[in-house]
Length: 90
Image: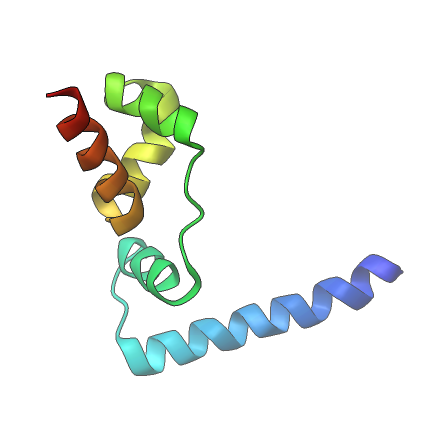
């Protein structure tokens, strides 16, 4: 019972957020939505350890979530961290 009391307002807020985003931002793809969420709410970035592992093998299947986060959603924070790490290695 308690879960329903919490879940329903969250679902309604989520639906409203989507309605606002669709009306005002013209989001055309999931990547657009992710970019907007990152810009507005901040990124849910991977840990520094996972980001370093991704950097060592970006095509590895286990890092596809990070690859999407960095390449498609274009997280500026993670991209900057990757660039700084690459510059440090040179």
